[in-house]
Image (cartoon, rainbow, N blue to C red; front, side, top):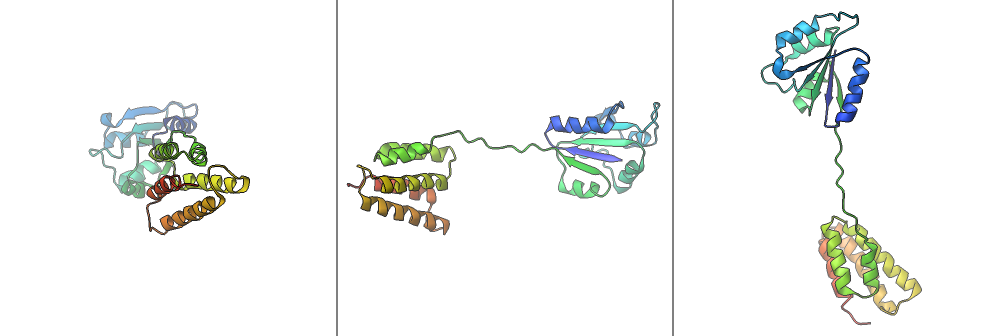
Length: 213
């Protein structure tokens, strides 16, 4: 029997490994210290304490000197010995080679890109005060930190609608209506591929805050 445990989540990989050998004592061997012949010796061995031996080997699949072929894999799989191959990753060709006979478990950690937090509502607040420089600087900071243009435009659109409902001393009603329409136009053009969304929102902020009431 062969188990192949791949990935860089070593904590969960070890938890799974411990479940495999339970109270038995596995044999941990290095690929650098074994040969194909020794693997076959383990395949035909019997535990002195009853049960089936468990052999744990690191990175044997990519070992160029051992190179297990289909027949070799079958011999190991049919053995009462349990072989556990610990691998960093498994190439597609190797996965295809082993998936019909071995149990393959992937323990790869998904790396989540952490975006530094920024208060994007600050952009809308600066916009509502008609603070062109403040809104522009905050917008550029947000873009550099990976905040999406969709999210930023949505916040500004919401702020414009709020000012239309509640009134503001910084913008006339007609201005806000034009800005709302223009922002929607930029959104649709960007999604049709007619303009760059990041540049479009930046130009919108600078031009709309430059106009007089």
